[in-house]
Image 1 (cartoon, helix red, strand yellow):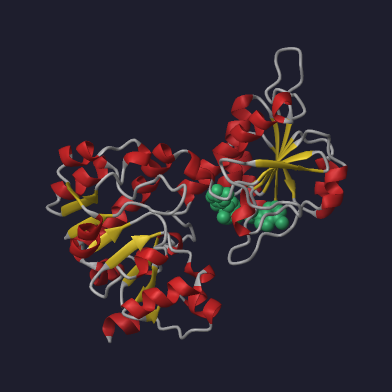
Image 2 (cartoon, protein in one colour):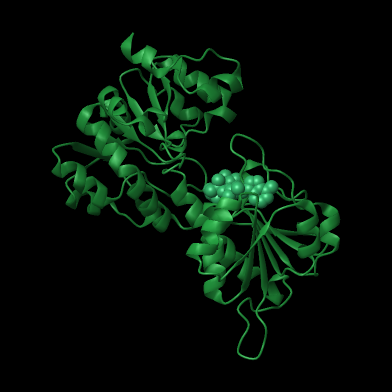
Length: 371
Ligand SMILES: NC(=O)c1ccc[n+]([C@@H]2O[C@H](COP(=O)([O-])OP(=O)(O)OC[C@H]3O[C@@H](n4cnc5c(N)ncnc54)[C@H](O)[C@@H]3O)[C@@H](O)[C@H]2O)c1
């Protein structure tokens, strides 16, 4: 198959959808790989590395017109709509339940659009979202520790303490992928960590794998109220699938917090779990409310494109290979997880929540493929 890798044109997006190592794997399997010129530069992956891996460096027009399968990181944006076509398979993050113009553009073009974020395994894991949550979780503790420094507006406390001085206290709201990764970095720094979650099974698991190095507590408003005043760093990492994040931390609770304490609301991309949170950017990541520093960067993994590109492509490559080796129809017939990734195909919406979100007709994928 001829596989294209387009350059991202969204502001502040430095990732690329395939590493040179991934290109090499595909070329070795007999596929042709076309990489848009300078597409890997933001991730420190120059054209020459792709050429050495056996890929061809091509122009913007060529990557879109010559590819049979096009790999991207972010959803197509308006200037790219005109390039969508019915004999192309697009594999990328789409998030179209929140984007009606793009949903319509995809459907009108007849393209086969497979979304990373809805690929879902039988045990309900989201394998192509998890790497970004892992990265965001790890950044959360790192950024929190940094913004606790006095010259940056923080309390002036070293999260890990030193011998003879107590460490700082970290409260992690939600012990999923983000929360777990935030916890292991905070523990690594030497902080005292408590994770609040709603799921007793998840807390049992965390307790087991972290060998008791964190405390786990059932999440409730009363519990958060009673613990927040003592925390130096609060990390918001909750997710209620398909819904906006619940507001677990209210403005009133902030008044109980220590001046210069830090909140990192990772859940900001789902609206945030802190009442006073609003999205920020890597160039201007923090602001204060009631004396508490808020860090609410909506695309945290974007700050570390080298790591994010590698982590993303580690996760996507097996699916890319499956589509390239077998074609989309056969690949989705073999793998239900990948089938769930198909959002729009031949003008039909095949992912029910997307159809519902926009009041459009839903067509089961099997009906399109068999029909
Ligand atoms: N800002 C960013 O750059 C960025 C990057 C990646 C992920 N995220 C976001 O981070 C959030 C967490 O993602 P994840 O992958 O860890 O999800 P996840 O599903 O793995 O974990 C969410 C956890 O929240 C728990 N939870 C639900 N309601 C709760 C409540 N009321 N109190 C305490 N815990 C509760 C769940 O039981 C679950 O364990 C999501 O909103 C995700 O979109 C943001």
